[in-house]
Length: 226
Image 1 (cartoon, helix red, strand yellow):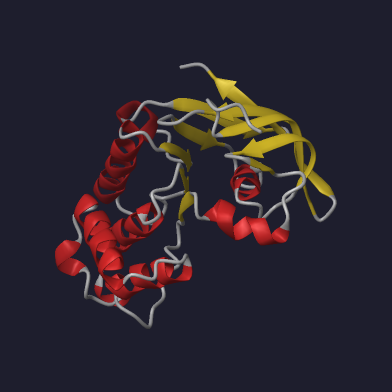
Image 2 (cartoon, one colour):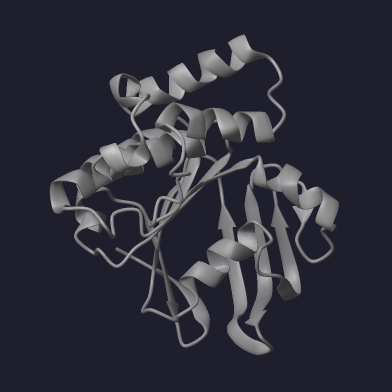
């Protein structure tokens, strides 16, 4: 059982992809409400580390725990239950293009076991209000700007009240003002107690939204003091 104060607890973890070591000797812990940046060049292992948290990239060795799951021994049937406790914000949105923003959110709730229609409606309304998108809920993805799509993606990540939000380059496809707005939403989410991990190349964000800084370099994860 993981120590209660840590949502993620990695000790001497090694992550491999296609038999190549991506990261080694990773020691990292995350508490509720923390706001953490993950920096590093393309190919340095940022995305592999994020994917290890939701068991898409396996942990090769070490001690790796998230919530109450041991990622070195997690079973395939347990993975969906782990992922329900995580909210994932993708750079390329990954919205279903054949249905409205609202229907995208309802699809996720139905897929994760929300059987009561009224409860689904209340939850969708709550997350849309949180990101300021109630009036755009019935638009198709192609009718929304990039920033509006990213706000819907953020709402989608919040649906199941996750303990952790993982955001992989959430501002990468956005203009600076819209990117800052998205980061402001994520920062507010952390202040309300949900841990947030943001992988980014945009160093200007660090001054506007201070947080812990971790860097992937030379196959290691190093915490930077600022």
